[in-house]
Image (cartoon, rainbow over all chains, first blue to last red; front, side):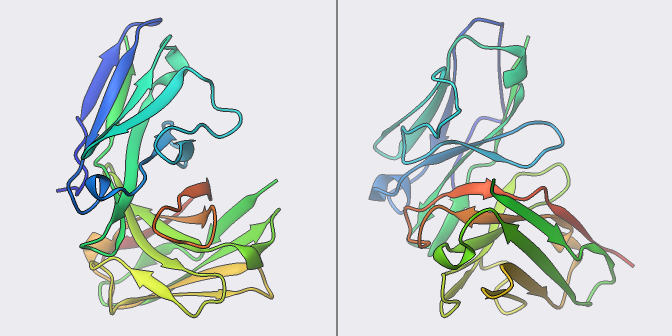
Length: 111
Length: 122
């Protein structure tokens, strides 16, 4: 059971918009700790996608965006492409555990 | 170009020990905190441990506390993870990950190695 809760899977057709939620609590997201997102393509290491709730590293397309409100955060992907098919993980810090925590991951399928 | 390369994985018997290494290049290793993150087969990511620049402060997930030890050699640009009392549920791909800054709570993993598989089995 992950500290941060994500839907196991989401799907969308090419060109559509999808969102992935990340729900935490008052000891992590709700306490003001930043949320970061990682993309893991099949068979590869994770890659930083969004940092500090809503910031994109250079090289990440602006089709990817992040937001945070209260005890939750979301990753939105617009103009869905086949190459976006991957696992997506949210990550934050938990003050009760005194450590970094991940969501369980969401598998994105492009139909 | 930032590069992280893990080594030292393999098959280990339950109760055994193993030391993972992570060779870093392409950035000033002395300026950044570092971490280990693992992923069990078919499962999600789990933060394992972090270490600050000087090596004086280390942090561990409850699941490995008392069994794993993180360290670094800044003169060799190398990060280590000493794993003892290994159990079957420690079987995972272990990733070395660079933290963006000093390792404070708001920090994040900006670069990852390709990972190294550790299998704990008799």
